[in-house]
Structures are given as C-alpha cells and as structure tokens.
Amino acid sequence: MSDTSPQGVLVCDKPQGLSSHGVVSRIRRWFGTKKVGHAGTLDPMATGVLVLGLGRGTKLLTYITGVSKTYFATIRLGSSTPTDDADSEPDRFAAPDALARVDTAAIEAAVAELRGPIDQVPSAVSAIKVDGKRSYARVRAGEDVELKARRVEISAFEIIDIRFSADDGQIDVDVEVDCSSGTYVRALARDVGTDLGVFGHLTALRRTRVGDFHIDQAVTLPEDLDVPAADLISLAEAAHTLLPVVTVDVDQATALMQGKTVASAEWRSDSGDADLRAESGAADSANREVAVVCDDALVSVAEVRRDGGLKSLTAFAIDLA
Image (tube, rainbow, N blue to C red; front, side):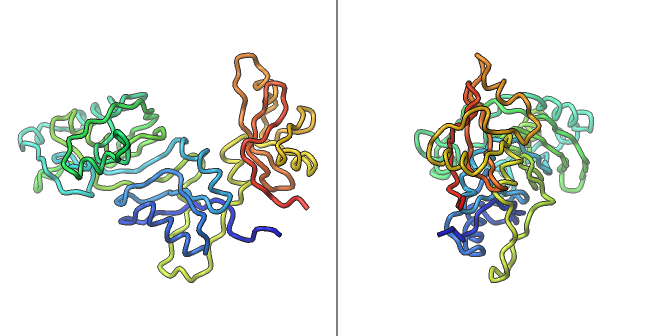
C-alpha cells in the first residue's frame, strides 16, 4: 500500500514572534501529519526562510542544515541587550560623546573587519550546549557563560543604509549578510558595536535564503489552518538543489533499496558532472554523495564509491510497482 501522507519540502516565511518549533507545530496541524522537522532554527524575533521537511522529506534536512544563508538585518548602535537582539531590553548604553564620534567611515571600517573567515564567539543566549545543558538555560539560571569562538565565513557583509538619530542617541545600520552555517548575525551586531566602543544589538532580522531555497518560494502560514495545505516541493526536486543527481532504472533502484551496489556502468549523471566517477575514483578523494532518481522519484541518497559503483546511504522507500 502506498503512503498517502505528505512527502516533500516546504519553504515557509516564518512570522515574527513565533519560534521555529511553533512553526513545526502549526505545519503539523495544517498538513495533518506528525512527521515534520526543520533545517536551521530562526530566533522568535526573526522572520523569513525556514525550510521544513515533511514525511520522508525529513531525511533531506541533514543536507540543508550546513548550507550558506543570506540575511537582511538592522544593527542598532548605542546600546546592547543580554540576548544581543530585541528579544530582551537594553541594559548597557554608550556614552553620548562616544556615540557622537561614530561616523559613516568608522562604521564601514568596523563592518569590513568582520568579512571573510572570522573566529566568532556565539551569543551566550543560544542553543549551544555547555556540558550537556543549553547555554541559554545556564544564562537564565544566573550563570556566567563564556562560549568558545568558532570559525565561520562571512562572504558578504554590506551596508544598505545608515540612519543617525540625535534625538534618541542611537544609530541604525541596515545590512545584508551572506554567511556560512553556524553564524550568529546578532553576534556580528554585538561585535560591530564593541569595535566602535558604543555597544550594539539587532533590532530586525530577516532570512532571505537558505542554500538554493529563496524567500520568493516561501509560503506564508495562514491564520486559518483549515484551508487547503500548500503544495510541497517534491523530494526529487528538492534533492536537485542539494546534491548531484544520477538516474537509474527500476531494477537498479530496487537493488539499491535492498542494500546492493549498482555498478559504475549502470547509472548516468543528470547534473552535468561528467567527472563524478573519476572524482570518486581518485586515490585521495572521499566517496561522493549523490541523489538517485528513478522515474522522477527520489530513490535514495547514495555514495559513489572509488570503483564508480553506487551504494545507498539513505533509502526513501518508494513504490516502484
């Protein structure tokens, strides 16, 4: 019997004030299924692209979590908060004379220092575990938490607009950030403020891209969850955005799902990568992961072994009849 439950990937435009877990709960109710997961948490104050897997789509999430991302954000200079964003109230403020000395050139120089590979100390109020306990839980329990720096890549950090406000003693800087997975944009805001000597935190954050999933694909969560569910990105289409794709016939697909190896000559690449076999056969090359498709259905994620054979790593249990 074929599985009629929802199977695929959904790009959601997360609303402000709702946690990523809250989005998952609403998607479960909207689609009438329990098997839903997300790739890459967004803080409650943030909006934008949250990629979810439904049914067997959850098996693809591991290939999404490590991709690069794009954000639009507003950095407020002149104050900081315990969470480095607007989810908590400002608790430290710059001296007026120090803030008055900050000009456009100084802001541009501070931003430039954070481009490229950097060692970033994540925000203490984060989900990173310290001795088995979430860092945010330790902070809320009154502990002083110092997290270790992590190497991240800031491939773009561009200033869109700067607004100086003499009335309320603050400077708002709109920026666009392209960064590697694991980057904390609110930590960038904190560090820009620290470099300038005036404190800083995020007042707005919107994620517009996760890998090849973009905001223009995103579905808005309806207020009424009784309306028809949105169309999902199929497993095969989603896999095309994440991995090189190879095609097999029904017999070869069956063999893969049974744990057998499909020989090098029995599959073809659909990704325009003529060197898939050659790369995997190189003496210093690791086995390469690919998405395996049969009749427009995703069969498995497999590895191309050094001899060019395919071996399934994650099967998607499709009906090949």
